[in-house]
Image (cartoon, rainbow, N blue to C red):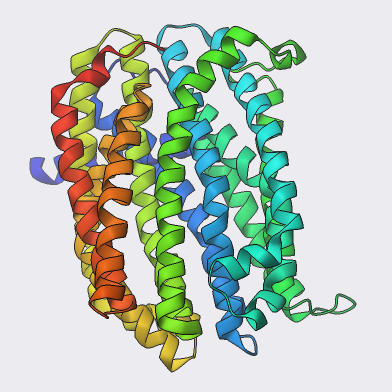
Length: 474
């Protein structure tokens, strides 16, 4: 009887934690159980990242059943590859915002945390609008440069123009969520993605296939639905930033440019942005390499595999984001040992999750791919890519936590150098050598990906143990 009561008590406690994590409470993560802190942060962060990955999968599903689906899938995939530059900027800025906001919250200074977050929005908004303009004006040329055929580029230009033109929504979704995470309120970040995704799921079939008086826009309709969905998600974020129900109480004065604050943020954000630009440009190069060696079907298969990979990888990234918040807040509270213990606890959970994902990917690759495209040639390439890339999932999971640890501590230069060496000095040469020199084509690219990620993780473990991240001031 006592064992039954104990089990029921543990279940009740776990359900209570889940409920608390989803309610959106701001908590002090510098005290109490580390395991509880990781779980409270990880659940909404994982769900947030699942919602982010659903965007691409929803688009992929609907356009994968259009006429000439290989063109549509290729366009969605190549556009996403180009948008990774925007994602890089957004993630880099959100990393800086999370690090500074978490540090100020750990120091019990919510006013300074709020001001830092708003200054980050100011910086990111200006840069993103400039990049959006470049993307809209050069959409066709960008698709051709990425390796798309002239037919695919012609079909995909309106899609890319809309996606690039709405880059500010992408930026704000990432950045404001980073601010909420730094403050310890991961649930608001999660819910903003719920709002955006529900809208996207409803609007995608309507704009792509038509409904009543609304005409069928085809591929362009996917971009329209995604843009409107993200816009609603941002509106939800702004409401919670300004309604005064959290420690982050936004005032107009917080948006007045502060040179010292901007300088401090840029010093943290610049290498953070650079590290993700380095990684995303590597993925762009790989996408172009697959497109030129594998043709339209090879490219479409690779892009399908990447979307599925991101669907499984992003929850692990969300879990690893817990380390960034815990490290930032605990370093701010001068609790270095607690910060380090939180990292290893997060690593443990991420390894368990990625082991589960590896099994699912190896066993279910064919079923997943068939759901998104009915083209047999595209399916064959995608299944091969998924099975090869999934071999490195556990190492991905460890590496993500350590990269987020460095960033959460404000040590954004360390992962920048790791990415530069891992992707550009290792992954790209290996991929090119296997694909071109040895004539393996797309297969060579698929092999290079888990090999490089494993290398990056091993280097990250070594640098983490050296401990430079513990001494960074922000």
